[in-house]
Image (cartoon, rainbow, N blue to C red):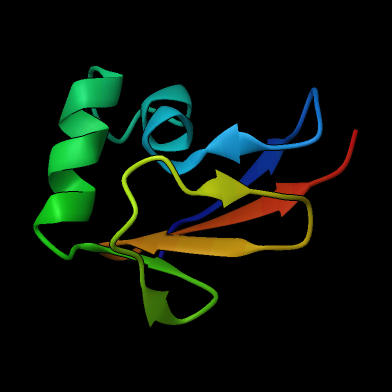
Length: 72
């Protein structure tokens, strides 16, 4: 399982943008589609909000990729 660390530049990042920023999709719209299809988990729970605010300390899973969100 690939493990990716993402460092926040602000207070939060929207989940669809996070997926784009780590290279799992080409755009925020494509990230929203991944969420809509039920392929994204935040802290082990399926995330249904396409623009959910992801903050430092949370873990996002998409497929077999684990994204650890860190504070700056």
